[in-house]
Figure 1 (spheres, rainbow, N blue to C red):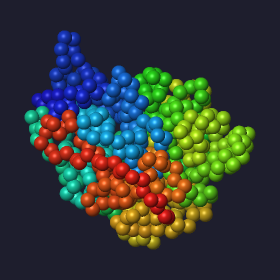
Figure 2: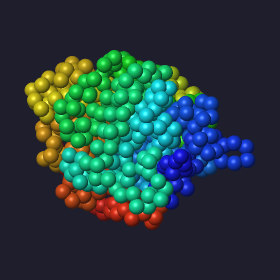
Figure 3: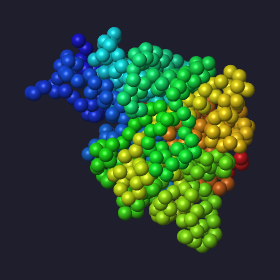
Figure 4: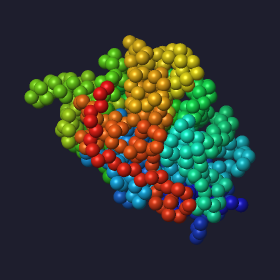
Length: 566
């Protein structure tokens, strides 16, 4: 019988990962054997539940220090996406190292260790379930095995895209990460090689094939557990990355069944906006009122603390009250037509400018902010706490739970979407258009007009961001993805997939002046347009004890770029 201790990570990182949040089943006076854990009543279901329950809610990397960015899966949305241009920060933000290509992205620092620790902790939890389920799961264990296969595929999809210097379609031979399964022996870990893109995505699809088989008849209890539609969605993402267009289109269409796109009222709800599952959400996680991330450190180590700005100044929150709100890139905002309801998720820069011209007309500013929020006074306070001191570009996409403004312990107990039907519609449109552009344009236009009835195809196809890799049609889809999925963890992956430059220096830019970089000053992976800091470093705990070749340490630009002309 294989030992459960072997199921999990790589070399010295094991010491860190073994302290993860999967509950051990330990008999009195000793450590449980695999058979004891496997046979304990209810243990299998508990291990299955642990896969998704561990996505958020606990301080899994630094429990004692209650590190504000140590709150699970959605923290990586920000750590990745701030490397691009669509999110702008303040100078003191917790994510400014990723935004500014700081020295701490190097292999000997915690920021390199954090994703490795988290992701291989999650892989471990999947491997435990798969070991318990066996090669041919019983009827009672099939759905649990399906969930484990689906989630392991999702985690490795992230790992491959974070650590490979080039995407699958651009270089199938680019190196990703080692594959650690429930069959990997401890003795094999130091010599487990990095897989190529081709090898890695082959294994990901094998996992998804099994998940599709095992979850065929599964009825999930809620949106926080993957089901067959989520498997279809993950396959659509995989085939999109691999540029297997027919398969991407087919699975994206299948994934949409039973879901409806968010309407304007739902998208811009002051009480339930992007904090509560609805008919468009296919998969999600949630922060609960008894989570450590909520109960400890004034709930400041949570997604809500980073993304929700409508909380009273008498309460807490890095975004709301500590001068660290997230903003939309000004150029992206200004390309959104006024007729597109998604524009209302961000405060218009014109409000800030009119307020300044009126010499601080507070009453006038409050009246204008009432169109965006039920707490206009709080928004002004949020802006005053920032270095820039302006309301322009502040995001209001992610709202406090139930419209709660006075108590962050309630306001931050929000759900976070991991997959929405809107993403599937955009994958379907892109994949269709790469086979038959007219058909893709029709699908894209139909979707876009649910957001902006006056949308006309073609306004965004010429914004290449220095890429000759993506077709004009893909640029149009990319713009829709940037606006629709802002803050949901897709921007980093799309920049690498479509080989885009990162452009932050332009007339009127709202990026931190020190980090206004364009492609003319940053180091790039050979043969790409995007910066080298978008290929993550392996932590030193990995490279010191194995024979895999590490990724290069990124180098920050030393000069501000000349302003880009759009």
